[in-house]
Picture 1 (cartoon, rainbow, N blue to C red):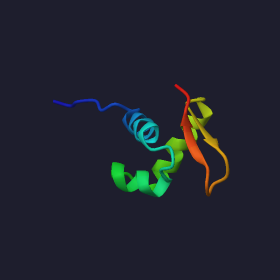
Picture 2: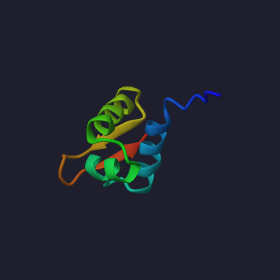
Picture 3: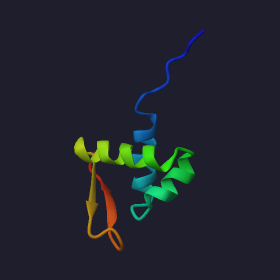
Length: 68
């Protein structure tokens, strides 16, 4: 029997981790969630386009804000 997986599972996991730690990096997320860095960054970009995630400040010294 085939079971459909949640297509938004990684996006939900990223939002969850970023709400716990706004200073987390894409590399740290990739290791924590066990998904490759390219897919992590793609998912982060999708979340920004959907208006669910925003970067506050510069790449170094800034943080992530979850907007749900």
